[in-house]
Length: 387
Image 1 (cartoon, rainbow, N blue to C red):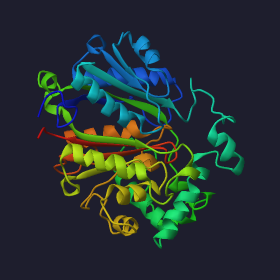
Image 2: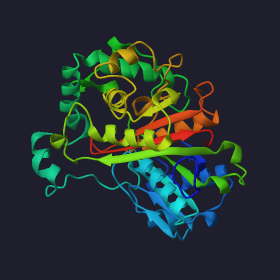
Image 3: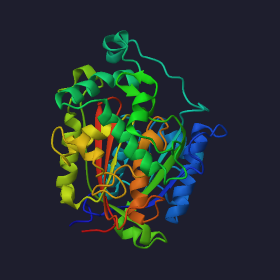
Image 4: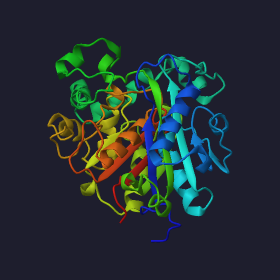
């Protein structure tokens, strides 16, 4: 395969690191979290800011981060499509590296989602489509915007809130093994269901945690990766895909199945040349408990209506055949507002064999992201080796 191909293992993640602290970090601003994660990732890669010629981020503008770090990039990417933006950055960086537009790309993330230090104020844009046609009816926050799709999904499959609760139960079992997870206590489905209702059908534990933190990635060509101190820790991009629908949930083609999940994951499998059976680790963006159910079905790991039983039977647990959200996910580990960076970080840790809750002999990880409220989707296939 040509080295100019962005897939097939020609581009590698050579640096990956989170901020020193994850969770409640009132002492650090948004830009400080970006910078700390960036320096940690560069150190992990064995590189310095002077080696970087490409910058990508979301939330802040790329030049805010590059200037703060003393980097003058020749390639920038400020793609902002919600929580899966950082998965898209990996895909875009791979294309840039393969084409020669950049040699070393630094992708950064930092959010003071809980403490709000240096974070912009949030407001509804009354002139935007969602401000005109959804906000007046109460769809003004994730927990109230996701309710109708989640209820439709459950109804069409003969499923119910207990299936959502089982997602939480499974992920707490992973989080209990992760010392950095915010919610680590083992829970039962009955306990999840009896917690305070935030917006039906979501109880408190079915909603993500709200945290501060960040992470960063360093990407370069596989050829250059081989000469770095981090060569034995390189993780390769085999395939990827992205897609987008409408920013308005009410305009989805089908609220019980997200077509962009289907499209981006299909492209990721096609470009990587692997099958579902080859995947031994799965990261599904889980801002709310219904999302892993959608993803398992829309990506094609299970059939329609089989996702709830698949999780309840233990298939995604440490002893299961498809370990999923092994850091505890956005429901239990961390969720700063945009979670996608942390899903990639955990996939890298698993493939490196350095995760706290390590999957034995993990070699191929599928990472699935979502942007906004069923607006965008990005999928990555990562591997310990090149084909």
